[in-house]
Picture: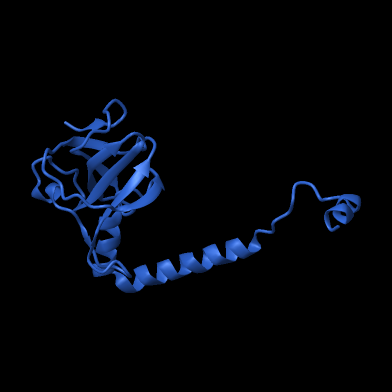
Length: 164
């Protein structure tokens, strides 16, 4: 029924399930493939069961309302190979809205989990906002704690020559 994505080439229309942080499943759909870059859209599908390829939600694109998104559709452009944890659901051929989602870097464990964030925004906003604030503060502390040390110091002699 469902299979690993290991031997499935990335193709337009492919639908993949992704395990969400709370154990449920979300899904996204590939809408474009150019060289090593893949454009995908996240669907509003969220359930404790893997989706069936006939589920109408897999044909929809999630609308994001959390924080600053203000109705933006969930999509991104990623490079490289998808993680092995993705579950290939099937292929849906449909005419896609051509748009230019944001570049997100390489595939990672966060790819395609926007439905989870939106669910948290709607059902657990207070805790979700608190967690996001704590993450921002932690990252700021970690950034300040990193002291940049050059691999090799410039000698006094070289320093003197460079200031002439």
